[in-house]
Amino acid sequence: MREEYWLIILVMAAATYATRVGSFLLLRLTGLPKGLERWTAQVPTGILAALVVPALLLPQGQIDVSWHNSYLVAGAAAAWVAWRTSQAVWTMAAGLGVMGLLRLGGI
Image 1: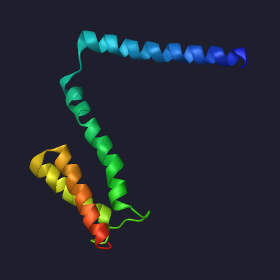
Image 2: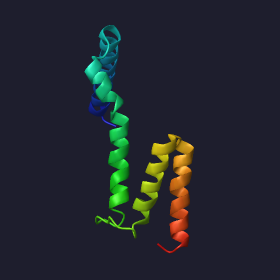
Image 3: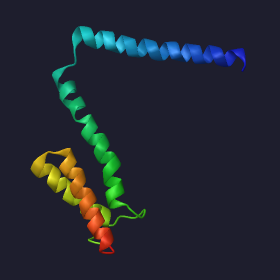
Image 4: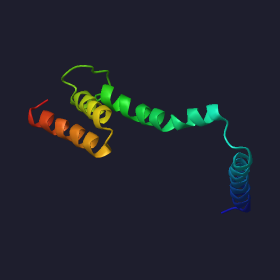
């Protein structure tokens, strides 16, 4: 490999390290503002929704909001169980169970 590539890799590694350490040290000294802390608490939920919702609504590449969309039906059942129990294991079991029943039923 050419020497320029190694230099680029080392400089980019140093820049990445410096920005991460700098952010860590700054936040360690000052802390996050309360508004930003509340906002960042919602980021995992937003990311999960961005990953799951398209899979539920677009199983064949087109929007399908009907009872024939087994992904949407199983997702709705799992969402209801999650809302009622707040238990991840029961939520996954409900989604998988409903999907299994729908597949056995030919939907």
